[in-house]
Image 1 (spheres, rainbow, N blue to C red):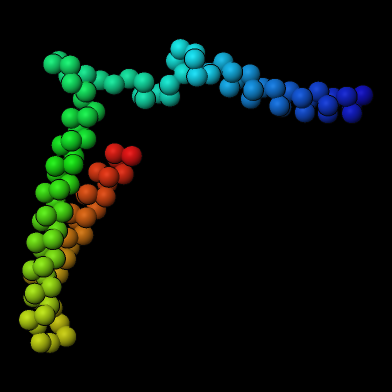
Image 2 (image 1 turned 120 degrees about the horizontal axis):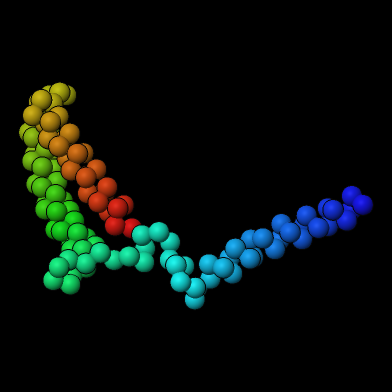
Length: 112
């Protein structure tokens, strides 16, 4: 009797995921994961998601331009410095660079 129950349990453990997959198959309504099938629209009909992504790209581009500017200034300050210490302004520029890069990274990871 126990061998039969193990066989039934094994068969059920294989069939239950298949039944769940078939119910939520590609052609069924509501098969899209939560939030994926819904694309909120602006009143003029444009996709809200695309507008947000375009603005994020513009902001990321501006931030990366600022990063390049700060990095070149920081490099010049470090090259001018003859001692093995750095100015407090240089440390603040480095922190600003890190903050901008993290902001861009978070936008890029949000877009994926």
